[in-house]
Picture 1 (cartoon, rainbow, N blue to C red):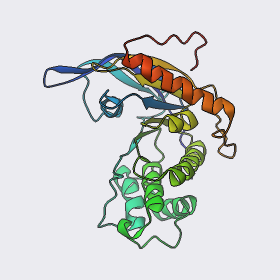
Picture 2: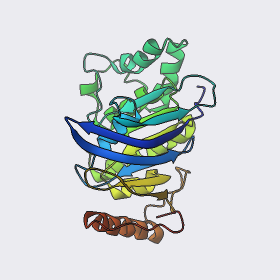
Picture 3: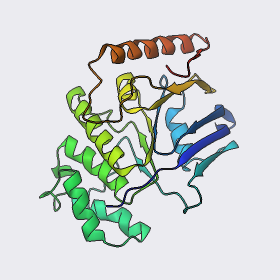
Length: 262
């Protein structure tokens, strides 16, 4: 399967409002092509709203979002929702094939077969989503998002409803898929450990109206899915720093990041 190359994403003086209320204001950051960005912040700060605006689902009231593809073509995007949004009346195969049909892409049977193998779902293609385990449903949702070779993958807390052990396994599975496909990834999570494991860069939002409290490189990020940093002292230290940052932001303090990293 041909892999995407990712695109750079930019938010420029971005503001989002609803019914006259400002929810997000003066958001500025860039995501280099092929990298990942974790969006974190306390509940209600607008993480999912920002994600939907970056994905073009919600309009901005000010500023802009840019997807820079180097002029090759119009960038393709895909979304994985918190509830996965699998179509229960469609089989595994049909769920996977739908994005290919909508995008008008050829070699559908070949692409679906390759993705079934990647997802370790071979032999389950005629089952319906409700006949799969929770982990299999999660993998199917990831595969459906990636099968049309998007340049950007957006995810809104896709692993929030599963237990901690399975979540760690799926995080590694996602990292392997993401590196193989080469797209840019932006995801919302309430889990600091998940942000530290999957986010090459981490952006923290403050309280409403939300602004960027801090956005910097993740010093413990490792792109290799076969190297698990989640039991290292440096990983635990980063989790403590992010937790302390949450407390400071809640108290209205600034987050100096002099080295450009958390």
